[in-house]
Image (tube, rainbow, N blue to C red; front, top):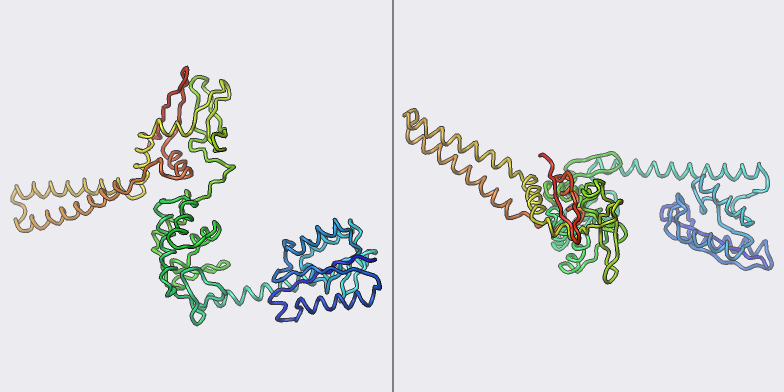
Length: 430
């Protein structure tokens, strides 16, 4: 009995244009087998909605794994472009089937891989299939670019928070979607949550499960500030933005918003810890504690003694909190506001001197002085707000802690005693 595996594939575009649907391909393969073989067993692998530009297709992978185990005699398909439209992939597939002594059969084409001329004909057919695929892709991309330039949204699924109306992108009427988008951006911009924390909060508040990739895609989507980007084309004011540009920029650049791998622990003091006993840099290491919890350590390669990252943060919490406050003050323009207040107070003192010398009219003096006072009070409120918004170092994500530490700390010195160790943190000159 001849063991035959069939492979059929369809994609939406090809099905619509050429009628190469799954059932038609199966019928052609079955008729071919009935006509050419009397004693055979046929099993067909059906690939739906997948492009032939890549070999990363579930049913194709399953076919390749099965033929290796089952030692099939033949693999039959409707035509070469159902198998692949990439010449490099075609070469790899032919090598694979030839190595496993499996005959390839295309119902619509004559494949002869036993001679150089036959193989040349097959590869020429593959080149033509790839060329057609690339030309179709180019035409599609040109059409999509033109639609974007005309202010139309040519894709089937708009980003969450938007809907398509007459081919234009407009904010959705679904308030819950808008609230979700606003919540994601404001939370990430303020460094309030790690990725895992934010996913948990979304499930609690909105009853939705949002994957890592979906969150990252949302945070990079410039349509939320009204800008459309597609293959080198940038269209400002493409649609109405639903996120404040300042919040969008903060959120999209937030390096702390990364998923911490269970295998790849975050070393907050990486490459800046030194053992002063041995006068050598300490290396990163880890260990497993209670309930398989992973812990991070810094170990001296000479004396072998270790310092726990958790204990280091606990011991130097006060100093770490100061540099954390400094970080947020720098981000919010704390120093600039203080300088501006000092400048305004100098102007007030100058006004007082001019008033004493009778160089200023009294009414003008009071008006100018009060205006300066109002500006000072406004700046002082901003300073007070910055102080209130400062976060605790211990509550920040490890990645964010690392960013702050490496911005302000030059070196961490560890001196080991009999049973414990002391820590000296040397800050950078800013």
